[in-house]
Amino acid sequence: MLSLKQISKYYQNGGTKAYVLNKIDLDIDKGEFVSIMGPSGSGKSTLLNIIGMLDQPSEGYQYFLGEPVHQLKEKQRSALYKQNIGFVFQAYHLIDELTVYENIETPLIYQNVKGAERKALVADILDRFNIVGKKDLFPAQLSGGQQQLVGIARALIAKPKLLLADEPTGNLNSKQGEEIMELFCKLNKEDGVTIIQVTHSEKNAQYGTRIINLLDGKIESSSIL
Ligand code: ADP
Ligand code: ADP
Image (tube, rainbow, N blue to C red; front, side):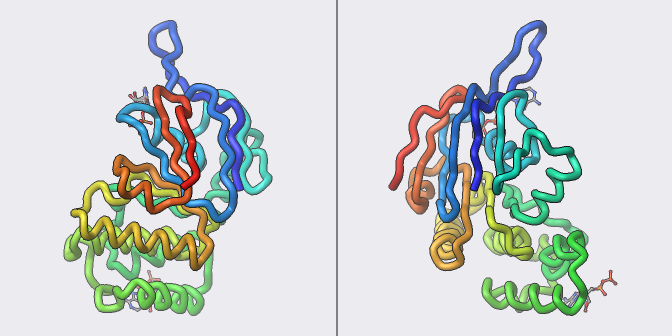
């Protein structure tokens, strides 16, 4: 599904390069559920954002679904992202002024999906996620766990091939966190969604099929579960 070859990311610090990622080689196949772990500042979010084409590497070669991402223009990268990737954030990033329904519908509007089809898709995911009764509420009226469910519904509404999640349970209590991890497992096993998450939690990482440990911008270990 994706391949990184000798990917580095650095920031200029005075006259020297401060490397955040240093010559990362990584292949991820369709159907994997990968957890990226490592201490604070080891480059986890940067790696996830590069994989998701939200950030660009300084050096190296990157392929996603066979496309050479390093050769694409901004507009082509953005189209590739919109058609294939869903992103879930630690702090949900829902739009406060929109209802649950409207938040989930937003990606479909950006993709110019017609009204009737939008309605059917949103109704289907509200039903699957058991949040039909919440559809007219605003994010502030929901618990953290419910807000993250909406964030995940929004990330999945356009049926992406790859789901990326940066500390998806970071703001949740352990019960809410478990529910989100169980949902990820189901999406991965039953719906075949490839998932890559950043997590600090060893327990959450164990839900996946592979753990990658980052240290100082390098892959220290990669283990299949
Ligand atoms: P992690 O997710 O593992 O905590 P990050 O990928 O967020 O790590 O950040 C890795 C390092 O990159 C940190 O030391 C951070 O300070 C640095 N960094 C991130 N963004 C910038 C930036 N725009 N300019 C300079 N340094 C940055
Ligand atoms: P706009 O006026 O900005 O185009 P609308 O508020 O009319 O957007 O909503 C767009 C579509 O989404 C319509 O088909 C509408 O019926 C549907 N819709 C919006 N909110 C809800 C909701 N809470 N429950 C069911 N359908 C909704």
